[in-house]
Image (cartoon, rainbow, N blue to C red; front, top):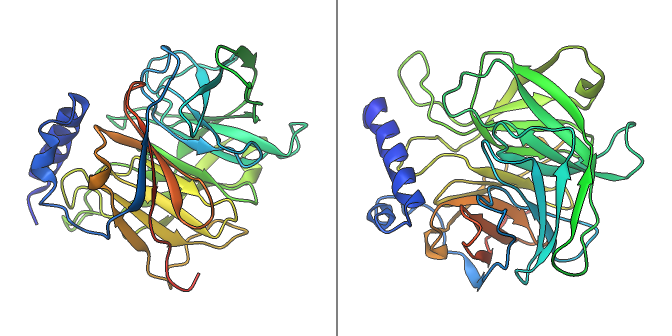
Length: 321
């Protein structure tokens, strides 16, 4: 195992290269070969709005076939974009009462008692590259209805939940919401344990009741088999729960790990080994987002930059589930 400083430097350097077009990123392809190859790969040009600069997440609608949501990350306007799997613009909404400090994660989930809708869009202002922010936030609003043609502009207001981590700040780009309304946040970056070893990806939980709490605390509740920093580009950039709630996909720049989950609570079932898919073949410049097209392991992948194409591909789900 390489010294921690070298691991972090390699990851940061590789991410910087990826952001500059990915031309030097191929140097890492032969280093990190974990996982089976994806199949049925389709690349779709995006006809996105010019305001979509980052394309940092992907959240597939469950009620509007082929529609997914994306957004920009740090220091951009608080905008939500709808696109479809044919690459078309399906609308833009401003979240009228929100600010985008570092929007890095999103999910669909139940609305709770505060919205007159069955499904809400959760927006995670969870990014914190330097792990210095004392609080972070999640916004929640009824899922918007995509327009039938390009050029639509809209707006909506959202509920806001401000929270802290029980053990101090973390950089998070992956969030998913369980059917029971609990929110799970997965730490992105390499971390060291007291014994000097790299820690597995930490999972924090905000209960559904946090929305009515006077002090919301994200508690460490689990860890995954992914070890950020254990290979170049192995950091967690997004996560998505399958529509039926039985599987969780967690992506890095190079792999997708698919875990079996409890379909009510969203918790990972560690008795079932995850499947691992190596997504180098997708050719992403800087892979950021993932969402499920269906329950059977067909995914959409988004890469940094509004001009980057959408990629759709199959990855396996764990055996026996």
